[in-house]
Image (spheres, rainbow, N blue to C red):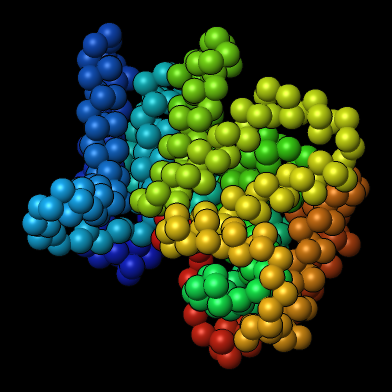
Length: 442
């Protein structure tokens, strides 16, 4: 598996693979020293590891962003911009960095023992099923599986894994890719060139696209893991049925939100501090979440936007939402999340605000954008599959369907459906070509 993971990553990032291996080796020796050291030596070791890993992330992911903003200041004050060779962004560096940080911090806290074999630590960091776009797997959740998987290596789990993988593939190929064609076309045009109805449909298409694209990848990663004897953490749970933004972040990108909570928000004081500091902690945590997603002001604004609504939840909104009932709360939360996706998708802040103005201009002018039957089919499937979890029995059914040892009827049904998706997705990929996963660029 380590050889396959190294080959997999080298295929996409031949230059950066040595940096990942080298820094992981450094972390390996630092962790072993921390386990036997005391006091300051342990703190120094953790500080060196954090500085190295965060420093690499800042350089590769944010150097261009910082330089571009400095260049803008130079231009503003009439100075001559300087030359800069743009830094290429290595695939998966955000996920790799967060996993390395969680390992080092857990060793420092004494939550886990340091890994005895460098090869096993490398496998944890570079494991190919979830390497590129998550879920973020913590070392403590997988440490025993790195050593022993014989009990989990069964034909039954391979069938469940294959079914889960193909369900994720269907989400991506049959739904997300189709919605992406419309969303990309709308966001590539100037907002002045289309109607308000097109603006609404464009952001709705992207809202469902990003969910089916990212949750599809997560399902594929979980399925591959099961086929190889690993159990990765769940990453999505019907996020669009959330009744508040607080609940939304318990259902959307679960491994990221829990990572932010355990390694940033709680160490800063969490809810145990005075109210103004607690609000600051929330905003700062989601500022980091937004910045983690991408080196652009739109991502920073998106993170602060969600931080703001989390504060509103804590101040009064949770009580209000409980009083108005489930359906209005779900609709309101979905609307807030959808508006946030405009900033996540837009190329710039000005583009995002122009798009918002077009949405609420309620201009009925005709435009060149139209919806074919293929798009409408994918769109209504996306709506149905996103909100069907609104009914509690449906939400709970997924745990039986994707259980480690499901009932035989569900095992057979899942496998048969997966075979259908296998043929269907294969045909769609051959006909439509490659459309990369959205989170590959993060």
